[in-house]
Amino acid sequence: MSASTRTVWLKNPLGIHTGDSADARGGLVVSGSRILESVPAGGAPSVPVDETFDASRHVIIPGLINTHHHFYQTLTRAWTPVVSAELFPWLKGLYGVWAGLTPRDLELATTAALAELLLSGCTTAADHHYLFPSGLEDGIDVQVEVVKRLGMRATLTRGSMSLGEKDGGLPPQSTVQDAEVILADSERLVGAHHERGEGAFVQIGLAPCSPFSVTTEVMRDTANLAERLDVRMHTHLAETIDEEDFCRERFGLRTVDYLDSVGWLSDRTWLAHGIHFDDAEIARLGAAGTAVSHCATSNMRLASGIARAVELEAAGVPVGLGVDGSASNDGSNMMMEVRQALYLQRLRYGAAAVTPEHALNWATQGSARALGRSDIGVLAPGKQADLAMFTLDELRFSGSHDPLAALLLCGAERADRVMVGGVWRVRDGQIVGLDVPQLIAEHSAAARALLARHA
Image (cartoon, rainbow, N blue to C red; front, side, top):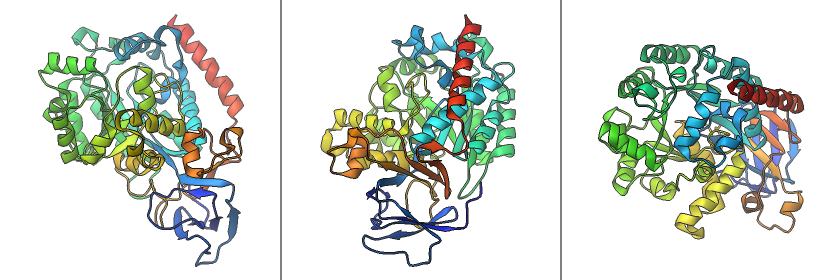
């Protein structure tokens, strides 16, 4: 994964959003895996460069960071029986299908999800994998290999489900595991794959699926293990009113009270969705530094509600964006997700309160904070050279005036170039070293076979 030691000037971009206050209208100088210098308008690098790339057709932004996904779900997009279902019936309809996943299915699903993300300008992705049916016990190891093959960064979370239907939970018994197995494998994966420090490509987090699919003991033991191993924690929380009702009935607590009771109300935690919090809960989350992954498209698709993103952020909650599983979004496109977040949050707070730059910051520096990282998410000297470059040559952009705003308002979908750690992973709109037509053929065949096995 090492970057070239060559120094490259990305010169005079059409537009640039750095997330940093420095003037970088003259472009960026990249050396090795890091950004060496921001060049002001009309300026030139202060150091010799080996190569100059004319970026005058490109809008440059930090590499987008996806904080919540379920890669395996790319195999069950737009499945007719759950197209118009809300969360609980949607899950119950799909659990039986997902129980048939094989290691090859997961490899193809992960490759498809990461490839789609990469083409949309995403350089770092968090995945929440919680399904380990018989034969898929090494699912996270499979994902690690795919991440390394594509050269992206990923936080792969070892999810879990231990509360099956017979004990009052939602998932079928074939998809749950014993607590001892979950905790032992979690510790193994951290030891085998977790990278620490700046520039890490693969990190491991611990991620019991949700209050309605794991026991209180697993939640509490996972928090203790995460603290001992110094890794981050992730779970679904406050996604729907059904979940709130479940927590009240089973635990006698609202969701944030439950989170606190099991040791999860901390700055080690980031939560998927976080829609149904009251004012006091938002304040408690902010005081604790607990982060939230806003999944706008999924929340609209399942009619779950609108997260209070601006208020969460104002209270001190790090807010990032996530595409969520490709069966509750039906896509893995981070640029489209930023656009959806922009528009959905404007419905709640008004147009002036949520600018395109604000939405991009959620998907970059906000997402980086949610994953506990300070080396990515902004384009500034010393930070990792993770960036995406878009052209505005398509008909959809014709007549646009503000290049940065045009990315969201005119609906950019596909990056022309993407760099991860100083290495080009997308050139001229194509993923380097990946046969996408072949991937589509194999992935589509696996999706059909998965449903055929279920039938």
